[in-house]
Length: 306
Image (tube, rainbow, N blue to C red):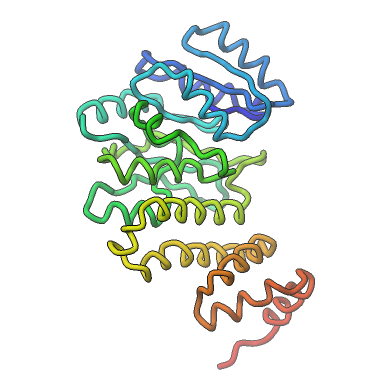
């Protein structure tokens, strides 16, 4: 568990670990340079339960914090839980036997639910079985489970090199790509992980950062395995990578997150991707933002042609 200024959430997140029906676990928490009350809270937790071990480092990001904990981990299996999210009390009781029963598998994943979203969003979701002949294409197309919705054999994470500290987000997606395409997967068809949306600082709020890091993780994966250009074809790879980036740009655009859309659109245009109609939407991203907003206002006020 990486922890950065998460004092308000620690009782809930660590409480979901303490409440596990399976009790043979260790919880390693790395305080990543918090300036709030996180570190004193972590010290109290560690003093109350010997299974909780806490460490402190200067702020270096979630990937570095997770890697620090991996150095200390003693368990056969490893799972990751952010300091503001939770597990179902039977998470370990369901995930450990599932992975143990499949000796060739490297990773088990489960369903999850988003909590705290407005408008009735956040229905429980159980992902499909990705252990199919099309697994690589499916995993390349997007992050198929959240970071706290998986259990991995610890030696495999270390062999893969842990988390990429160059990525400020999507470091879990990068790891799942490297592990999930090399080792069989096990699906646990239960909702066992909960992502809590709140008003604090959350990585997922930055659409441009998420989109561009997702794209960088894809490109890094493809650079490490050039044979995929033959297996999937260059056109399909462009659709899965730059095409997905364009889709995320449009999502930001229609939500009127113009700074994110502009940043994403410029990255897409540099790749020479998109139809003429796409470029009509993207080209104004090179204008000053105030001019771009004025153009959008004019477009919004112009009646559509019948």
